[in-house]
Length: 545
Image (cartoon, rainbow, N blue to C red; front, side, top):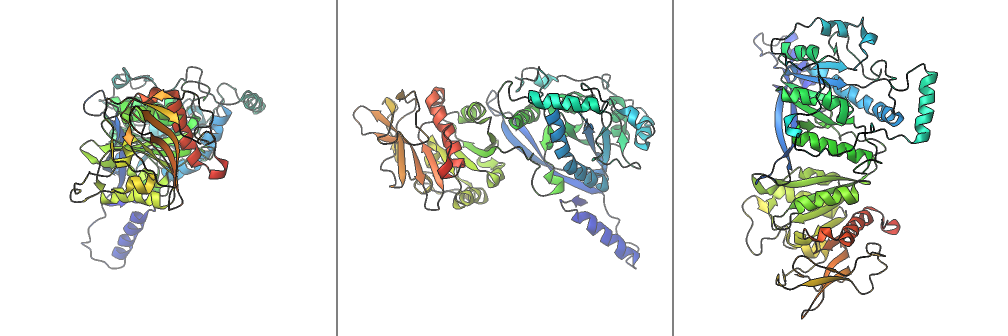
């Protein structure tokens, strides 16, 4: 089986085999097998025990290209939202490349610009879809919108789209409406066809917005795997008769191409995050409750698509500890404190191996790495990913047990796994040796001379009661700058938050706070948010809020 690679090398090899046969090769040379797509499906996997926070899970699959389809949802030539048009226009060239690669490998391409079929009345692709024989296995409601499937019934929908999700400014919207009227378009429904950037192959492609027609196209060609691209994820891509919900609940192996889509979400609505973070939240909802996702680079190579206006800081949170519930507190913190200006990716342990982290390669592209891990030994290659990030001089943030993230306390790592006993000293400038007794109550105070530091300047809410035990962390490396100290009766003050200038030139921030109840302290949340922003900026222009 020839696997479709990002640069199309399999197609080149197939052509070479054919040409050699034509030039006198053996008459008994084996026929080339059909192409396939090597895809990595991402889902949000329920944790064990149940009720815990789901974790990202990945599954590698090989899809026969001729048993695969791509449906293009509502990539219209216009829209009532100016910014939505601008983003779709930016998305379209790469989407067109994706369609070409899939089509050339033998996949079925279906264009579904809903409500625009009149524009294609005489197009061969439309006639081809209309002529498709019906299927006896057609679901009864396949021509209906699907607003929810059973798996979503108990879920909290992540964004507020009740007002339509338009994110134009009033000035932009007024100017855009004026332009639509000048073009003779209805400002409320200005779409007339699919945008021309997306090429339709008249000899092979289908054009339809009907659930029964598309179901027949898939069934008659024994299509098992379906990819959805287009807009808008939280509306048409999910709910159309050919959308993710209908195909998922009716048994298709369907996946969203998560970087080939956009949402209708206004950052002025709940949860008051970046437009692009709103898309991320919808993608996670889909991965948890509806179906898996992939990214376009799996077929095209290179990097996943990113909108030019998506300038969010890329934060990777590596979470692997079982004492302080940071798998719950950190995602909640990220939404509240970082949702407006950061793209947060969670890297967590594999459900079957607490020492192997799913999706750890995301660290390669991170601007900031936040670690909340306790005594894990990683596969050597995975720990090298962390070492490479540090060696590149990139910023690292450590939370509580990160001081002993990769240290087994004297034990040797299992075969194939690696530890890093010097991690605390080398990366954070720390000196963790143990913790004081759990019964010792400590309070958190500003460290002497730290009042002008951008991470704590002007913070209200100090002192506050520390919820977890007080770590023994002193003495720190001379290159460390204490910001907060923990104070308890009968013991010396201990640093509980500090910055550190590493020998590699990179900057780190560490705090031994991070108990789940510490996240209930506004001052702790603000300081941790400032740490992310400060470290992601050049040191001479760091922001404080």
